[in-house]
Amino acid sequence: MENNIHKEMKDSMDQQYMPMTSLTSGMGREVTPDLYCYTNQIVNLCFVGLPEKTNEWILVDTGMPESAGRILGVVEERFGENSKPKAIVLTHGHFDHVGAVVDLVKKWRVPVYAHEAELPFLTGKSSYPEPDGSVEGGLVAKISPLFPNEPVDLGNNVEALPADGSIPYMPGWRWIHTPGHTPGHISLFRDEDRSLIAGDAFVTVKQESLYKVITQEKEINGPPRYLTTDWDAAEESVKKLEALKPAVAVTGHGHPMSGEELSKGLQILVNEFDRIAIPDYGRYVNRKH
Image (cartoon, rainbow, N blue to C red; front, top):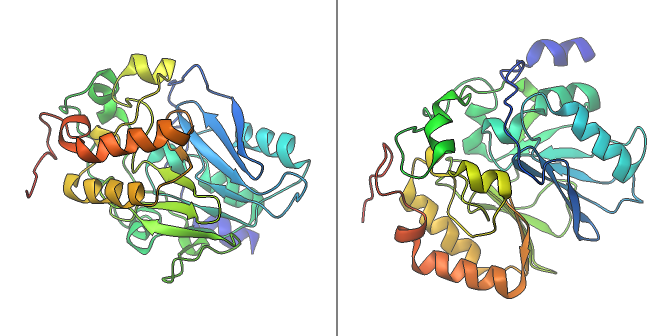
């Protein structure tokens, strides 16, 4: 079985380390007792599960390329030595969310779940569109053509999430299709306490600006502009998430938000999506309405 797993997977993130970081890199924070957010360079991962239940947790997203060692260190600190998750759930397959996925699957031998529409980008079949370096927004956007857009290949270690919205090993949570940033992008929501793991459907930092990425200055924005290809779908996804009235949200980039700061910020984003989220120019700025 071990050899088969190694042969079936191809790690396009290998040797793709990028020296991008923020002031919060390496920091973790407990958002709720069983929702832990860890910042890996410029992106957030979520560990869902109580720390005393050492093998009953789920990892949501897998960070930047070449980061498996750091993630394993966080796992040991939070859940104990030799702990591993029940599964990995991916909000989408962009490089900064799947950077360590192949290494972690080789180590843990656990299943990976993603939306059916995202599977081509996780099984080596399709590359994402090229990042748009011409997009308006800042230095990170300008250097985005250097970011890898080729797919990882998880072989038969990845499968589609159940069509009924449930998430394996995550009772009480459901996945919500939030396309726009990618075709199969999902967010995760728990109705009981209105906790939201938003992925990149919206973020709480201006991700195009190098200064704001480094300083992690808080502000609710739409999905990262240089990798978002369908702005109509992205707007509908934000509306869908705002309608849930989340009490707390962990986004793929930026600080977790809660309470009035979150609710007001999302309302403003929905009401002024064109002004706040959509760039003034760029390759994928082609609105249908």
